[in-house]
Length: 271
Image (cartoon, rainbow, N blue to C red; front, side, top):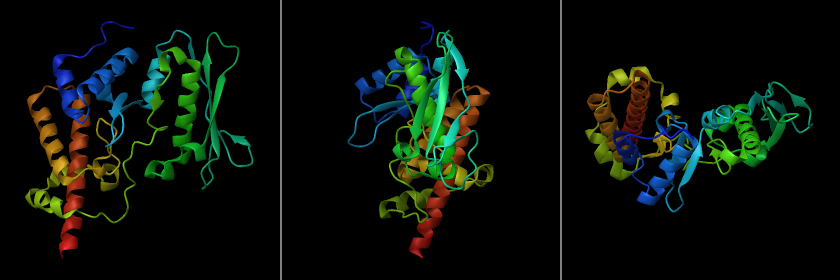
């Protein structure tokens, strides 16, 4: 492991504010896991999730798992993903309107004679979210790839699961948004930024997640306004690299769009 991979005090402070729902031991565990794998939580390579009444989970994105594999001197690439239907016939592209039944991906190592394949069944991983509904072939291929990477590199990736494999959504958003009565007071004070609403489509905003992997659309108006205030402060007070500033700006735009959507539905209910 590269001993230089660490976090500054300012970075740890920012992470602690983002993961305020973790206790001290959980936060330290998350940071140590990020250091061990040498993955950057600010670039969404790794993050922690803790739902109410459950234990913390540290998850990697599929990009994070790929980065760990690439750092290995024995990593030799992957085979293209293959999908099959209930007939068991493997195809290199999935063009059917129905989801594939399974996907397989092989990971190659320089000390292996042949690729190490892993097969992921759609029914075993389907979470029923918008991603799994609109991109079933892509989502199940991530699961197959994560399985293959863990098998090929167990010393580094044992116990490391991708966000595609674990359901991190608190709920599936429905078409009708119900605004709780206690949110209306917060929404009444909210004034939408018209420029922000031009920069992001509502459909994209509803898919945006925080650093814990949770959808902003699942959060209350009160929580969103607090996050909005904190992100605005970070953008104004810290000299962030252009790439990270763009990530924060996108999150802000998503929050603005979601708050506006909540406000509109709240007004419709009142009427």
